[in-house]
Structure formats: C-alpha cells, structure tokens
Length: 97
Image (cartoon, rainbow, N blue to C red; front, side, top):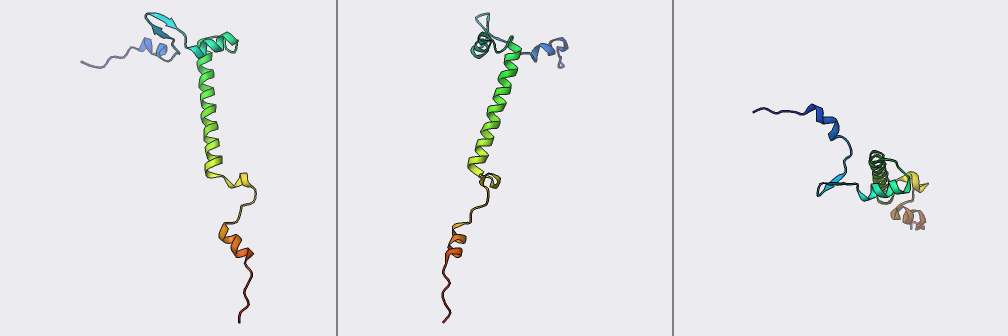
C-alpha cells in the first residue's frame, strides 16, 4: 500500500491539452481565433502567447494601481506643499504690540 508514480507519463502532463467533450477533442475558442488569424501555428504557441498576455495585463494592472493609488513622487515633479504649509507661507505676520 505505497505510493506509485507513473514516470513515463510525467512529460505528457506538462503539455497544453485540448478539452474533451463527449469524447471529441475540442480546441478552446481563443486558440482557434489566434490560429485562424495566423498569429500562431499550434496550440502550444497559443498557450505560451496567452500566458504572456496574461502576465502583461497583470503587470499593467499593478502599474495603474501604483500610479493612481500611491501617486509616487517621481511622477509628480516637485512635491506639493500640504494645505497647512500653504497657509503658513501665505500668512501675513501680525505686528507685535
């Protein structure tokens, strides 16, 4: 009652596999679209391309989040003074009596 590994099948599990519906293999719609447009030649290239596109979209989402939420100072040029600093700079000194 030990654990057995199928070593000859390991390389097949890491490949891109099409869906099987009712015993008939079907290629995903996005892969069919890319192949029909001539962007890619086979399903493995499609899987790699879609993985790269997913990574780029994820990276761009992080960049947009950082720019609009944290507003890094290197994007703003010179730092803006706070409202308190602006009031102190524009204050007219009162004469001491």
